[in-house]
Length: 159
Image (cartoon, rainbow, N blue to C red; front, side, top):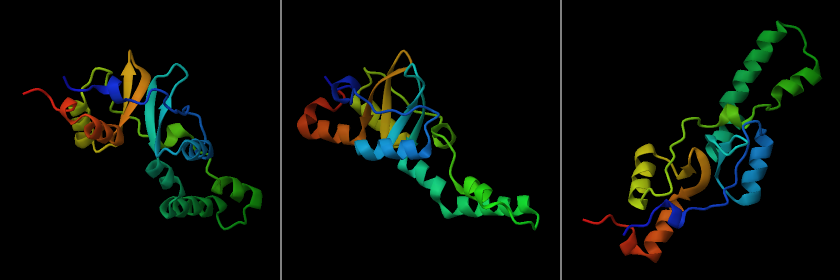
């Protein structure tokens, strides 16, 4: 019988709320040594995923150039107050602003081959596992690889 999500998932999943600041998300990811985090409402409903790549967009050069263009437009040739410029240059976005909102999820009884297919088809690295819409775990590519190494016969679908 093949393994399923509940056999290999991480159960104590680190999450952030939608209103977490970029700095708070970065701190959580750094503290826990993770490269992405589910964004969950208070009841545990997954509303998004936020990865290192999503956070990096906030600090990219293109974003800074756009912000500078808008500041110049607002100034209309006048000198803006330094405090205002500092405020505008600071990143005040929240997790909800940067997250990927369409999250691919699976259930606890989803088999590892099915999860592997989801990861491949959607080009993602992890799948939140939900029960009645509430996060109960997460399965990453590393979890599947670990399962293959430990029990190769339990990963394949019966033929």
